Length: 406
Image (tube, rainbow, N blue to C red; front, side, top):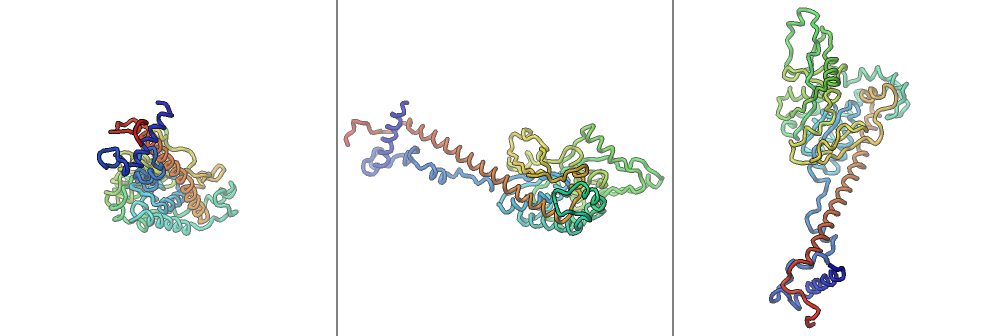
């Protein structure tokens, strides 16, 4: 249709709508069906009153927390921003330290209370740790010499102390709240017996606990080596375990099993089965798949503790995964930087990680939400224009012609 003809018809339809009361054209005194033509409506007002606007911050999401040892303080900062923004978290999945963080959030009555409690957890651990023996005052960029000098003290830190994590969970994670709380999945790796070589007849008669840390004081521990080979060479995979319905003791052991780092921590017996860290073993560091198809939403927020991707978004093409990545390396440079970052729980570093997580979440999520809002407006405007043009071709009972008397 010629553009001039389209404009002429639009003017006629608009004139008809404006003069309905004085000169009705649809029946006797009846208003124009549908009111003012779409093409003449204010598009901004039309969008505002359409009811299609959807605040992306209020959409339900699944929260996925990666593992990374002491770097997990970063996720506590992210949780604070999510709570302040009113994000509706409906389920949590975590690996290793992400499982511990997730348990605190899932068990809390609200996300705000969970974020506040999680900060207290990390401050408690930092105060138990204390400042490092050698420091230049730079929390996130410790030099190689300082890392080496501080490594012995960090290897004896509270997180690796027998019973410390058990007490931490008992203190900060309400089991009843976790039973009633958000659906929670954790990543674990089903291991082998950590002490395959008995050294005495007493070892053969040892009674194993069904739930709890595996104790093999009188044995040669080789299970961790077998598990590493199974994971890295034979591609043995981790498991996703739903924990809300588990008995109290089993629930805590599954969470702690997810954080049982090979070599430095013993595995945990869960129903008599030894389980280890699902982060380092089995490729389960970012358990997005644990929530796919199991929760009533298609949007996830995945919080990394490394800048490198841990999964391919194409694996979950039917879901929208918003990734929060550290804007700067959380591991200091040097040959022992990765190990130091996993163990460094000093107060200054915990605070720096917490603030970095908050700032990264604010910047990256605000950008994602803005893009979402722009997409909504663009979609509406395209539909608004399409329907306005289509309306010009709709059959009407009487369209005034040029020959009509004024």
